[in-house]
Image 1 (cartoon, rainbow, N blue to C red):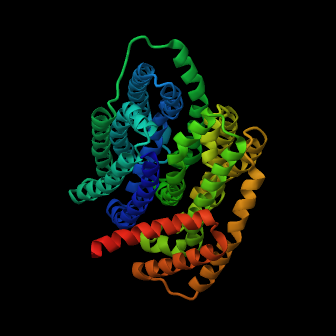
Image 2: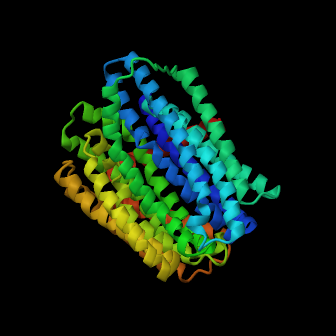
Image 3: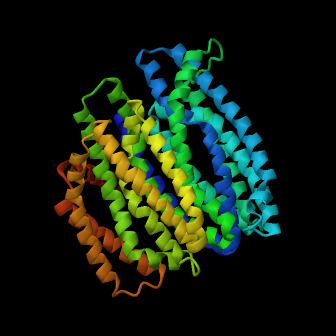
Length: 510
């Protein structure tokens, strides 16, 4: 059952990602044209400011699975109930803090952004932030329910719910925009989806997982242990927020909402890129924790690290190489005129981000071994440096300068320092990992060069020609990878998937 849940989780993750991105391709250009560049930039700025309240999670959500696994191994149901109770109290406290700090931010919007925003934009931003703060507040108690579902490895429900949310949100956005709402419509839609998701998670936990809460006999020692473990996860969250959200904040201070809109398009493409990698690694979190709990040998952990990393690299190298070939054309057709710099913003961030994306399961290995402290401290120092250099870069080079600052931070922290740390301290065989990745790089480069040369002779001036060209590129990519890139394990995955599709189709025909 767990194996089926694992496979279903990965498959549905990609179905959700493909469907979400497909819907986004359709509705984003409509949204951009209905909102306008400045209105979209204002929404993105408000979202980036309120997203800092998510840091009040303090990393507790990531800590839940580790401590749940400890009690589950001993079949301690009473301990799990006390753990649930403790986490719920903590998250409800975080909700209250989010409201308090959110109110402080709302009251100080004028002081922070008066140089970059007009008076009418400042008024609207306060309205947007009020609803966004509410969304953050209800997100915290839902963390317990969502983490419990993950701990039970019920990926099927999670991915289906994610799929429904991905469809519901853009539909609501378009409906509200047609009704005359502007950026407020985007926030209203997000609020409806957040409340729906919370209700569904509560129902599933009570109905099928029979979640229990015990608010008595809370162990202070356990709270201290969870807090100590979570603190460095929190530092890591702070780092990620600084690296990927600070650019919009800085642009709001020194530039205009137009610059924020352009940067946001490039950054959103990078987020799509990240989601394709994360879809694989997230379903392996419980397995990593079990392997560490059973004190599996480092060679076996490295084997899993390489297995997952190769699959992630194959998937995202298709996306990255395809974006290099077709990205400028895609942005021109999709987002419209005025967003040309979004291509360079996305590329500047995506290229160095590739390395941590194919190694992101190492984060879970570090946490399971309780060795994530060093990573958090290093990332925090680099994130502060990113903030410092982003201000002058944004002033002189605008939105592209902000992207350069983020790229420098990723190269220093995620690429150089963490590879050394994972090899020397976490005892993951990094040289063996890169030898395995090296076997895939040359086929990817070959396809990318061929695609780039051919694309120079094709006039891609509408969405139909674009999709046909992209489909041909994908076919060429997988053809070359099958011959020169895939190992037997990866070929077996493809064969197994194709056999299942063929059998299902055969049954339908019969």
